[in-house]
Image (cartoon, rainbow, N blue to C red; front, side, top):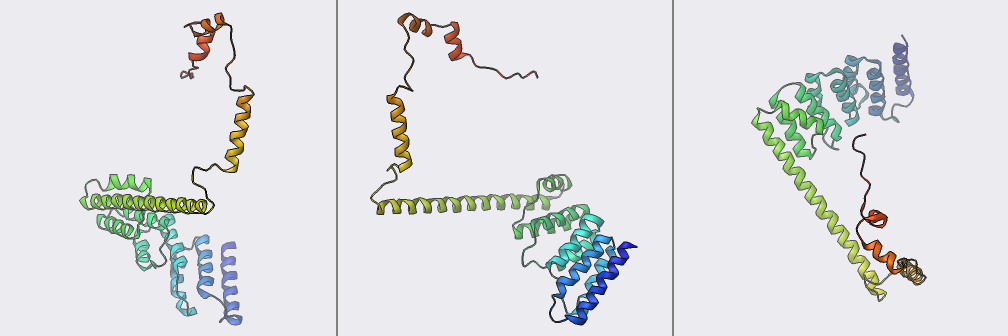
Length: 250
């Protein structure tokens, strides 16, 4: 009863808004909110039928409209037929999120249709979207006897390699640009890349002072103790060579 009251309240708000602010509202966004109420209440058929109401308000479903319906039909209902009917109508500009392509590929695998799975792989290749590890594992099992699936998986692997190489080259070129820019700035100051910075100069002076004070000098030993420390065996030898071993039994 509470869900029905919320639905009546939502439509009451829509009716009041249409009466008072008809020309000032984004009706697509308003109807998307009403559709969200239907989906949250579990009225899946009413949510799908909401698509027919957009024309009555001189509005058109947008990408968010289809995303809500596709998530409902795919994740909640596993309705393959209606999912792909809406998937064909989904605007591709702007590009849908990768998660939506993953959901569509999952539904194609659920349909057990090789033609539909291959079609989704083609779309993902065109959109430069790659399957998740879980979907890749399912593809390996479901398509082990379908040559076309193997071909498109190979094309996706090759495309992924090309994109990674392109990204690495772009990052390298950008890094080299920063290096050249820094070298040019140093040249205007009469310096080279090997010229120490003020911080490096202070660090060198500090460690030179420590060395002068004898902090890095080896401890002096009498001749007998020195010869004994160089022999194998004994505490001095053990301190230099014995290493603690991890307790692999625990």
